[in-house]
Length: 305
Image 1 (tube, rainbow, N blue to C red):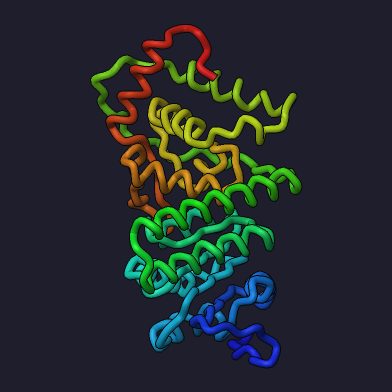
Image 2: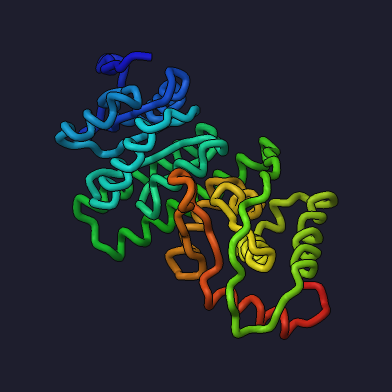
């Protein structure tokens, strides 16, 4: 695949700064370009992963940067992701990273908590919704008040989540379980003990509802993630981001937004894997763990579903 400057005659231009697209393959570039063109965006360039970081360094102005990943490109991919995360955190541009579930752990490890729109196994509708949010961030940077910005972002996020749910319902996507995570040392708690069998029974009961009803009507990703992390803590296991997104039982893009919210509110803690720089673990914050254990102790024997 070679870097390419887009032919201006084929594009729909606007007065805004151009969107810069980078992709891990020709097919990945085509996906991103299709969604960008459907949104009426001005595309400045479409580049290989290897050329994109240098272009970003030299770029005078860009409204949005879009990275489309369909394969692991190793170190060049990691370096570009870290560059985008840094630039997005400094509000240089709005950023979208579209990836596959297989790449979720290395991608999230590189992006950290940067304000990047991360979408997973997305269709065109989800890509367009993410582009709207990223574009809104760029507009915010160029002059909207903080209050108006927060309101706009919230509305756009609600729209994106709705699109994700609709796409999930139509596609009926499912995720395969992953291998158990490595064992960690047990944590000390000044709260009642909870049996791991109790938590597992509750999780199993929640999943069984999907046999009889559409899972979308029971979507409660925050509670599902809390239960999964409590089970892992009791079992002395670590949970990578990709595993937690599966446990949330919603589309991965929606699960990632919930995860970011839970981390920002101090309910979850992200920790880098000391043995693998391309993976991040998630665990309950100490106060969250104590609250969950006290909750189970107060509820007692009745099933908490």
